[in-house]
Image (cartoon, rainbow, N blue to C red):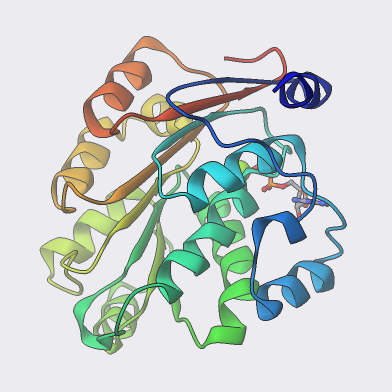
Length: 237
Ligand code: ADP
Ligand code: MG
């Protein structure tokens, strides 16, 4: 117990919530399959960053999370790695029924970075990742989504467009990530984010990451997360 408190302190992490799992020290502690471990090694990640040490066991246990940490702290892997595990845990991949993991990010650059990171870990399992954001042909995107995927990385506006065009359904979606929630709100995406969340079954796992927690984001978190664990790294939040 005291050790866990000391270890969290050394990571500059604060947590709140119910029955929070103890932070890991290594990626091996996460119990990842060998394909994921090789992909981690290939990325050159030797050990988890502070947010990853605490967020990985929380998310792997199936809980909702609010992760507050500044840019560059390694939040992407904290939601991408457990997403791969979540997808592989599904009983049968019925490929035509739309994504299992849905990630929303504020800009196409951020969505693209997440897309690339997700692809690195998804590849070994044949998990299909689709990127959905502006600046790409809607028709091409429509066709790609129609062909099926397990993960969608999207900006909110374009994802709404694709949902309206019935390029995909959210019937299979059980893992939702809102990345850089504060920036999505700054850019005026709150209605689109709320609409997307409203189309995903309530028994999903929901992850919200943000560098700051303005009141509006806090309110959304209260409304859409179930008993979340809150992990704050450093002085932010
Ligand atoms: P954030 O989303 O918090 O801004 P990113 O997920 O984009 O941070 O990660 C920032 C950088 O750190 C990226 O270049 C990423 O590849 C690298 N990174 C992430 N996790 C690790 C790790 N465990 N070890 C080393 N580098 C890492
Ligand atoms: Mg990020």
